[in-house]
Amino acid sequence: MRLATWEPPPEARPEPGRLVYPDALVASIPGFRPLLLDLFVPRPATGPVPAVVWIHGGAWLGGTNKRIFGPPPGQGRNLVDRLIEGGFAVATVQYRLSSEAPFPAQIHDVKASIRWLRHHAPELGIDQGRIATMGESAGGHLALLAALAAEVPELEGDIGLTGPGSRVQAAVDWFGPANLLSIQRQSGPEAVIDHDHATSPESRLLAAPVQSAPDRARLASPVSYVSPAAPPVLIIHGTADLLVPFAQSAELAAALESAGVPHDLVPVDGAGHGFAGAGLDPVVRRSVTFLARVLRPSPDLRPGTPGRPAGGA
Image (cartoon, rainbow, N blue to C red; front, side, top):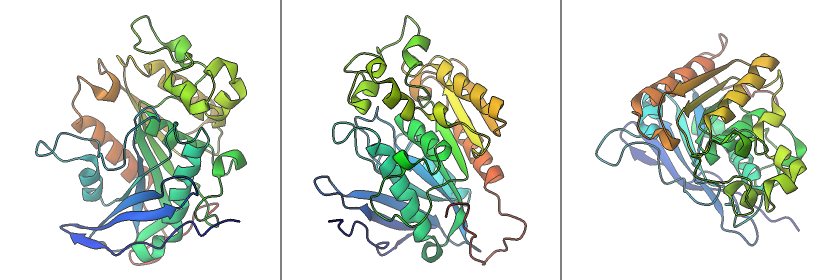
């Protein structure tokens, strides 16, 4: 028996420059914790605004949607603040970690959040046809999967709302894995992890050593889904990343180029994982500028009119 697995948006909490919808229930999954998201919508707004679905990192083993990427408190504006200032709604979403459920549960959860957001978009003041995914590390991997693997049955899932489409219109990937089968081969001698080991984050995600489960590894690899139908993608990656090698992003960019997909690959010279050793401001500015460009309103979308659903919505 399938249970009722989602709830309408909670009551909004007004804050300066935004409305906050905390802990919206996206899905109740029997035997697991409920999946929640926090939604921030800029105010005032003259019409439906684009939305960014932020997906946290943590090697699929940890992390939380409550931790917002950016400087420590009191030392600068975080990513959500920057996006809201740019006119974007931001949904920070949860997903089941690899010790809770193996892949593809994680992308099922992300897509459930996209469907929830699209279903409730009119009452929230969000444009159904201008939604992007964005994430760091493991979150970047899931942001890419959500964008590139649109309507792939094995990756859609059936939790939460299942009527709206999960297709998105852009993706921003910060140093996320792109090909689980090649990541170890691309890692240099100074790499801090053996990605093919049975206890690696990738193997834990798949519930099997990576190279022993090539079909499952391909299913979980964003590069497997590159096609001319893919939306625009921005990839930003430190060239000195010892956890996820920069070559992962170069491989993905080459596949996008071959398929004719609009994309930008931005190397951050000398930066490690998490952009360690480099400033965040240029990365955030580049990301917000990209999203503003690719999610700008269609010419026939006037302020104050409802957003038009994208394909699959």
